[in-house]
Length: 148
Image (cartoon, helix red, strand yellow):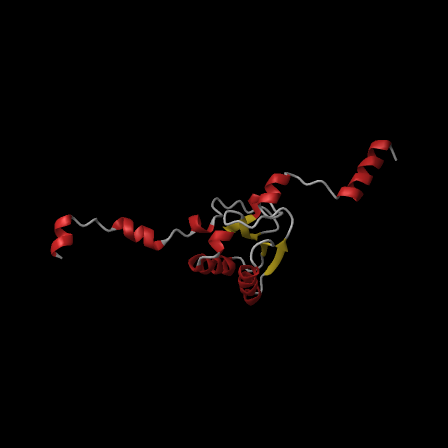
């Protein structure tokens, strides 16, 4: 075995196989962006409407896998583990390269191969209905507010 191959083999045994695009894999809980159907930050996971929308996504893709951020609170983690178990969807808790802040990714519904979803953020996929209803209502004038 030539020296370069031997060193490469020893490095793989010592440090593991090198990652392709490691920054992207760290951000997306060990997978690639192109494999994601939907993602939720820890802050988004706390909202009931996002949980309901996530169930819609689970119904669309029942054979896929959920990746959960292992550093989030156990209560929040348990809530989504129960959802996954009830829907019989596989899940994995990821503990490497994760943070526990509201802006960190907390959950990803992922495929084994590339699906190239254009929008994966849950709140962008399912915009709030209240915001669209409010934008359609005309604003009342001061006269209407005083006498109606």
